[in-house]
Length: 186
Image (cartoon, rainbow, N blue to C red):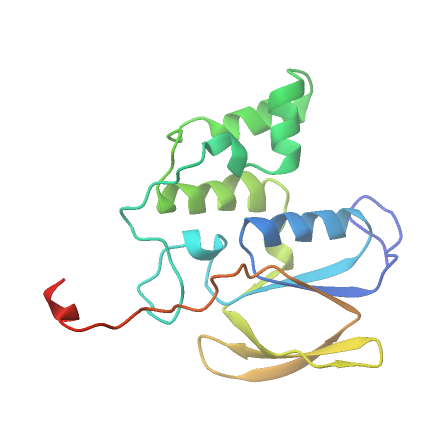
């Protein structure tokens, strides 16, 4: 088996859990290093908590939220490199054009779209992401990981074996809402 650019796959199968910004770049880096990688994302699109949802069991940014970081820090390492260090080459033009049209401080919808279009599609990552799949359990046995994966669409489960796992779920992957007296007044 070889990678897209013809190099041999060196490290066996790796699972990336989560298709947030960290998960996308982990998927990209592992694939470039010759691993056979599949990412699992419980939502139906990339973005992690920036992919707004009304599902109260997921952590999500509010629709009215604005990122307090500049759009240039949301790009991939490759994108940042080309913008900062060169005006030459096909990647530089494509990366720059990926940032045009977005506000400097993006809304969750803009961030999610940016990750989808300028990272996942640009680096051809979507083919290696299994959407609407949530990892339920992940016992490690004899140098392998057995991931119990459940569909968030139909509830069907499967167990898949991997040699390595990268957890890219972030610290806020479970929604926790406080309860307090007179909460209904807010």
